[in-house]
Amino acid sequence: MDSRESAEMYLETIYILSQKSDAVRKIDVSRYMGYAKPSVTRAIGLLEKRGLVNVDDSGILKLSKEGEQQAKRIYERHTVLTKMFMNLGVDEETATEDACRIEHYISETTFDAIKKHMAKYE
Image (cartoon, rainbow, N blue to C red; front, side, top):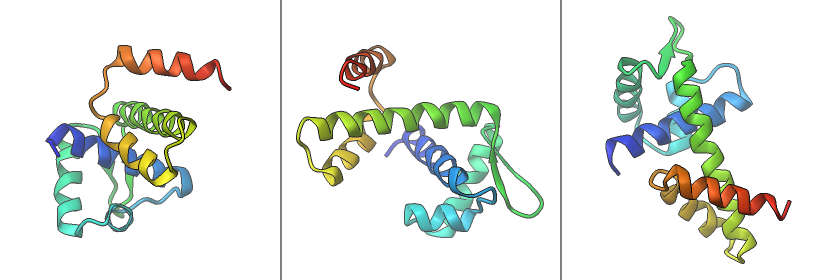
């Protein structure tokens, strides 16, 4: 996994967890992703330096405006691609795993075309 893909995975995870709770902490990210807490701490520190995540004094993680925009984009890609694969007959687990891989590399042009195509069937 390259650093861009890794950063996007963390942003998406924080976004997903923040939809369920106002208080997302590193331990929550660690549990959700199945990563060791030191790895999560290092990654969050890098995202903080890039201005994508803010950590308050009590350890609560918040996405910055830019971080949230990126996270929403990745999450949308994930959900649209998963739905498309499932509509093609792929089982949910495989569809989710494949979408997770592809969401980081697909071009905006191709994704927009997929989204437009999928809208015809909603």
